Image (cartoon, rainbow, N blue to C red):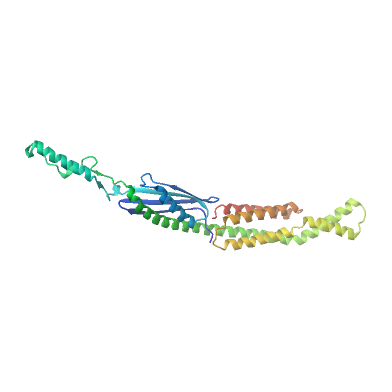
Length: 299
């Protein structure tokens, strides 16, 4: 089943007191275009993750603009993780020992209690990431990206299924118009032959040799003949039904066939000497335009 290029997915996970969230958004684009947005607090070299993530997404998707946002948040807000500045704590202990030596135990107004320690600015703080944390973060981020990409793939498939149904309905509509057009051809040929013969007699003012008249009428009718265009239209429609039954990306091919259908429909309209035939040609062009709109949404 062909895929759409539109979709959204989100996947999150935790490691070492931090929460990672991938948000993937996919919209229409002529080619595959991937844009990453990095978190400001990412430790180490961001390009290591970006390069690996790029390769994994390219293996899954053929077309579309993908916005890939990675959010990295501390879980301190939910009480999961705080960091103790051990060096500062040692300095405070050393300072308290020096004060006791100078003032003596009686000179101390109070002991260095746990409450006072915890209230000291900077002793307990939100944990910050170090460059050494980058490797395990990359591993978890790539695992989450695979899950988010799989969700996005499924979302695009669901959307593609709906679009495929619309395209098939439009193809049915176009095929019905083509059947109506083909049904008009025998009567149109007879009508064109009668009109041409009457016109020739009117212009010459004399009887024309039937053999000469038949030859001239045949030449003129050949210029107005649209049987070849109708056959090519049928061939393109069969190709499109086959194309939409597969699972490979179809957007570009569908757009190409729409151009071919439009070219043949224009030829039919330009050769038409009949109002009913012209109306059918215009209706076909409207259906082709709708098909082209859907092609812009398919991968």
